[in-house]
Image (cartoon, rainbow, N blue to C red; front, side, top):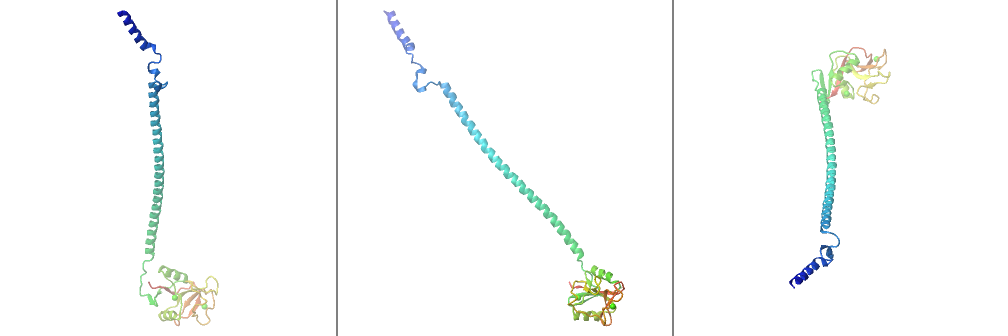
Length: 237
Ligand SMILES: [Ca+2]
Ligand SMILES: [Ca+2]
């Protein structure tokens, strides 16, 4: 009896263990047909894919920011180069300006006013003691920042006449075209005052330059190669 009972109980355990073909993990309908390992693997792959995608997006974003920063850097370098070029040009211009100022200062050094210079109506007049040809006299006046005398008025003519002691060249000539008289400072001869001596200018023997007579201040055309005193004129500074 005991053996039979033992055998029946053993038979039920066998039936519980092996009799039901749907028992065990495979029979759980809530887990479908995938094993936990595959599910875990898929979850893992999904997480890895998400992390990878996020990483790629972060890298793309960083790349865009770097490109933007590089562009800004290049623009900044270009601006610095432009500023440097402008600065160099400015320095060169300042140097050139400084050299020009120095040159002007040298050239504008005041001419010493001696007893040979006389003042009249805010003008300075130089009465030479030496004698020169007309062209040389003009050059001497230029060295003193002046020009040969140009008579512009009766008052000026009178003032010069009172101070004249020798035949003296003035800044009037017709060296370009005979009979076409011109003042050295561009003053128009036609409308300007004239104080020619009697029967002058008579254009004898290449008389292309004007000489002032010391007796009455009258003008005479005379050969420019003759040697005479001269009168220079310039504004009073
Ligand atoms: Ca004058
Ligand atoms: Ca003459």
